[in-house]
Image (cartoon, rainbow, N blue to C red; front, side, top):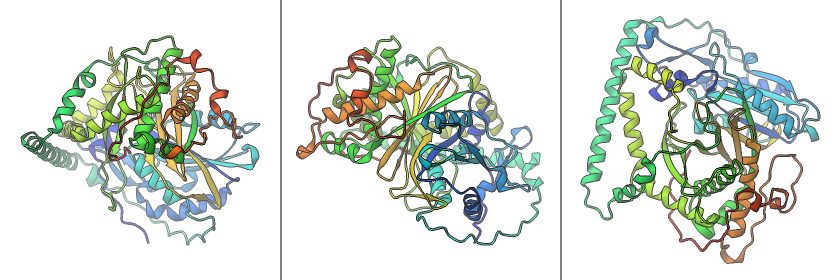
Amino acid sequence: MRKPAPTRSMSAADAAFLYLERKGLPLHIASVCIFDGPISFPEFVSSVNSKLALVPRYRQVPLVPPWSLGFPSWQDDPRFDIRRHISRVTLAPPGGEAELQELAGRILSELLDRDKPLWDVHVVDGLADGRGALIWRVHHALADGVSGAELMKVLLDATPELKRTPPKPRSRRVRPEATETSPGNGLAGAISSTLGSLLEFEAGLLQLAEMLLNNRKPNPLEGLVELLPELSASIERLPFNKACTGARKFCWTEFAMADVQTVREAVGGTVNDVILAVLARALARYVKLHGQSVVNRMVRVVCPVNLRLPEKDNGAGNQISFLPVALPLDARGPVRTLQAVTARTETLKGCGALGFVKLIANWLSAAPPPLQALFWRIIPEIILPVPLLNLICTNVVGSPTPLYAAGRRMLAAYPQVPTGWDLGVGCAVHSYDGKLFFGLIADTEAAPDVDRLRDFLVLSFEELCRSAPLAKGRGIKRRARGARTQQEQPANPVQAAAPESTNVGLPPTDGPAPAVDHGKEAA
């Protein structure tokens, strides 16, 4: 049964991603997925085609109204053809990870074609060891990380059995809906969206006033006051905070979720806190590799947070807020770094920082759509003397059980988050089937050695595993791995990496950390 078409008008957040995009700033989310065997191209195309009725948005194209009087809308594509979205590519010999990463970098550097629905999939042949791969992209105006992960679960299968493809629905000619793009209709939509955003902004102000006047102790704003100096302080540029050119480089690694959970049981914090602590240590090493000091320096990481309600069909599009976290680069030891990260994230969540960010977003959304379109089109051309943030790190919860494509089991799913402007590196994490998969995307001019940052992630995670006071005397099997080859790495990957003393010299002296409550995970 075909699902009814979703609301056609974009939200302000969805439209912003459409306006922001340009050659040096491709705004698609993506994933490189590796399977245990080659994927049958005809069977995969047939399977996806039979399921597109479940996601009608993926048969629609964006249409911008005249003079941007209203937000863009989604219109059915009368020329939709699945063959324009799924293509086949053969990997260059010898078909290892280096070749796959190079191919992924080229594909991720390209903009999606606006004349067709904003997604595509490359079925990759020629991988070593008889494996297969998919490289899929979805524009950020169409989906955020959470809805993108949900799309993966729709287009893939929960079992290896190939299901019979139902008959293809008879195509029908789609008439363009001129009334939705006329100036009068656009003006009415602009007024309606502005009034709606003003009401949301007013409701947010009332909630803020209620929180400020609440007599409960301790006051949640007290923690925010403590963090204000570092949140309001100007952030220095890291080596990769440079203007981006458009060409991208992509690399990855993965950690066992069991090891992450063991660290949490021993030290405390959430999965996100562990990710951010490992990232902070890796960035410290990378900064020192480039001859810069980490003393008294912070890195400002913005983490998208899922706002979807549980057990409710919230649809596609962007339903996220952002949690800005200033992380110390000079914390003494991995566990103390994790403690510092946990303290900051718990304070931000406890004081309602997400509400403040949402309030600002509602305030921006209250501006007339033409002004929003002008703002988002101009802002990428402005490079400030100091960056507003250093990088984006997103963590998306995926399927805990295996997924399949044309009967082949997915072994890995390395995610990609958009980056650009003066953010030369982006970090995305995807949990799937008992592992955390890290994807690092970088501008080739701003961070040509992003693979070193990937190696530092592995080294920093191993360091945290060794330093954490393990509960009940259990050891941690070191299963973090780099991405030089698909073969198993040495039992201790630290031995394969450059010695810590030659990279950064951060001493791993730590003490036990107090237990903390686990808050809502970021998207």
